[in-house]
Every structure is written in C-alpha cells, then in structure tokens.
Length: 348
Image 1 (tube, rainbow, N blue to C red):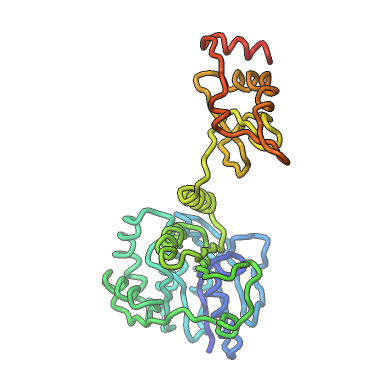
Image 2 (spheres, rainbow, N blue to C red):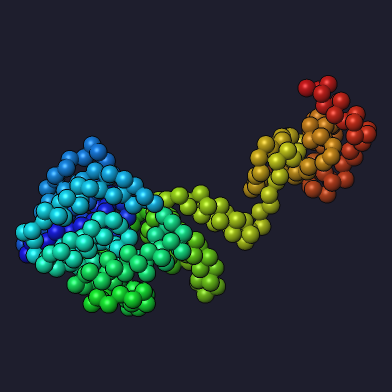
C-alpha cells in the first residue's frame, strides 16, 4: 500500500508522544512492506528536504506563516495538490492546518483520508477558541475523513458531541511488550526497592504532571513507602519542584530559617556565628534568631564579643555543647534602636 502521512511534527526532530507516534507507525508500516511517505513542516531549516529514514521517506517543507503555534506551509499544500499516486492519506490531529489541507484534498479527490485525533484541544489558545473551531472548521475537517481514529471510547464520544458524523474507530495506544515487560531489565535511574509510581511525559499543563504529585498523598495513605518518579522535560519543571518542596516541608519537622538571621553553633564549635542571606534549613545543631527591629549585625557583633562567655557555659566530655535553654537565657543588652544602627556602622 502507498501511504501518504501528513504530520505537523515528527520524532526525533520534535520530542513528544504525537511526533513519536508518527515516526513509529511509519517505521513499522515500512517494515511490513508498505511504501510510506511522510510530509511535515520543517522546524529546522538546516535539515534536508528529503530524507530516507527507517524505511520511509520524509519530506520537510518550510513554514510560511505561524499562527497560535500552528505552522502553515504552502509547500505542504502544493504537495497535497499534486499527490495522485497514493492509496490512502493519513493525517494527524485536526488542530493543524496541514490536516485541514488534507481534508480539502479529500473533498476534491478520490484518495481515502484517515485522521487520528491526538486530543481535542491545544494549549496554544484559550479553550473558547477551540470550542468555536471544533464546531466549525474542526468538524468540517473530521467529516471529510473516511475514518477517524481515537485512542479511547471517551474520546470518540467527545468527538461525536461536536457533530462529527464520520466513522470513528477506537484504536488504543499499543505497548511494545518485547521492550516493556514485568521481567524486563530495570532502569538504573530508579534506585529503590519499594513501590514506585512513574510519570513519563512532557512537563506541560496538558500532561497534568501536578496531578501525579497531588495523587501521591492518597497513594501514600495505603502505601507509605511508595515513591513518585517524574520523567520528562518542560516549562513546568520549576513549578513542580517548588510544589514538591512545599509539600515535603509540610510533612517535615525541619524549620525554615528566614534570611538575615543570626546562627549560633551549639555543638563542638560553640558560639561560632554566621548570618544567612537566604532562607535555609539545617540538619546541624544550630540555634538561630532574627532580632527585628534590632539589626542582625548588632546581635552578631554582640555575641562575637561574648563568645568566650558562651564557651564557658558549655558542658560535656568528649564534645562540649551548649543547650538552647542556656542560649535563650543569655543576656542581650538593648541600647535603644537608633544607637544599634550607629554601632553596627562603626564596627563595619
């Protein structure tokens, strides 16, 4: 069979589930003896126009215009206009202009068209924009197809709710059981013997990695030793790290030491002093205080001058230490708020 595949993106030019789906299907169909040509929009002008890859032919066309993250290519349109010697056209995602062109091609030709729905909405525009699109251009595009493929029954029902009348077939995503199986090799990146929950996907809103973090609270109620591993890249990484840190600190006995606090060593190096410039926690025996509105430097210099007294208050045999009770009871002379600042300036 001669297959023309129309896809906006393809792996490994672009990482992601959709692009990999396009590549893997083309590779496997070529291995089965089919003649597969993939037409895509080039994201990198340095890559060749024509490339033979894993048994199929890849044709890249430059982007003419970009609208809401949707690259429009007149080259793809011209190729579809001229395409005549194919048994079927398979377009991926109704959200791309290339698929709209494939639908237009079907309107004026006898070449059957299949469209794979990779998700009804995109993150490149507000939901109301896609609601309008799905009830107009999107529905028209789907209805030009001889068959629409969806991954789940739920997706089929959602597509039908927008008035799509084309035949819709549910074909679930497959798993390579030769590569992924219970008795297969374990990843060295997961060095843990207990229960593991693994999230694999781009760290973007559409993949909802934050839900996996929240769900772990419920999982750990029944499996307290379970761990979550997130595998992926994306713009949400910083937010996820902050979310995980906040939840971890909420379950921890560790205390935040706010910036500009005076730190006092309690074990070994009794009375050793410091001032932190950022929020920290510590697993060391360190007392801390922020004497607002008194300048922290005033307390720092005061304790530095009194360090010999602090050391004499230490107790212990092998390692001398001083308790928080002693530190809290240590006298601190107040001279009047304005004078504290003057003294600090003099010491500096």
